[in-house]
Amino acid sequence: MANYSTDAEMKKVDRDIDQWLAERQDFSDIRNLVTARINERLKKARVWNTLQSLEILTEDELVDKTKLLNPADLEDLENTWVREIIYHDNVHSVSEPDAIAAKATELRRQRLRLLRNLQIVVDKDGDGSPDCEPIRVTKIHRA
Image 1: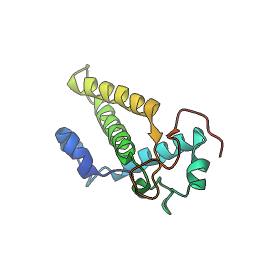
Image 2: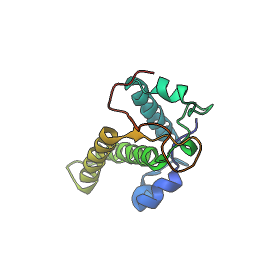
Image 3: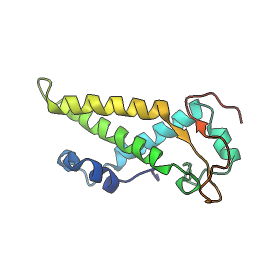
């Protein structure tokens, strides 16, 4: 599955993330789960059909970031969500709340804020100006 971001991008933001790799080569399993959840969120918000009609979905069933003015919003959301899952997974291995638990909680708050504010700004022709009104994911849309 293709994703909205990469482990390399995530590691630039959170240098400590490598310590959670353990037996993994990468976080692709978690990233694939998160990508699917983002896409499901877009579908539940009823914007998927709108994105499809605007022809900005890729063959991999992703929003084509090259046709957006704000591709970093999807990248940030995915990286934050992946980091949240990784940190929360490790919270269960400690006996009492610590800095890891605090980080996991902060990442959850950040993810929820990013989801609440998520909007997709389409720029299919790449001229730097929106081709239509920004598509707010929290708002109900009809295609």
